[in-house]
Length: 229
Image (cartoon, rainbow, N blue to C red):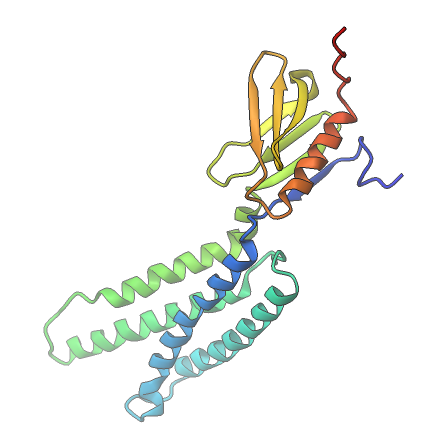
């Protein structure tokens, strides 16, 4: 028997919203922001207004890598929109671009103040630095964020979360009286203490199939309800 379909098998599946692929494409277009920042950052160098320093050379190299990573991201989204690497290198490259540009803007204004201009608070460097920090967090945490939606089937019971802001249902067979279908894509869990939990799969990618997996898993472990009469 295939271990992935055996009632005794243990499997934890990451669940995705049914619009996940479209959301990822929309997010990928958001990466044009750092690309525009890079373009404006190197424009003074191309125009001869600023010298081409080693730091600028590093920014150009990171920018080239960023463009390559953007193309790679679009190809991955086209072939497998649910794939997620342990580290999102595109987000890291975006963070590096924004951090470098933040430093350049701050340094430019700092040099101007040393030359005699009055001190002023410049928001843009701090804004770029804050966005860069967000990109760094996303680079290392996106896989964990995806993992908030899951279906964990194991011999002792099951656990499931179908909404990012919702709580997870973690139940053992001793607590479950029955698991029944409810509508085209939901499951109704009846507990031995009289409580009921409705688990909605309708907004998930392949939601009905995941609901059916849960039903089949429960059918393999719960005793069938006695027929009336």
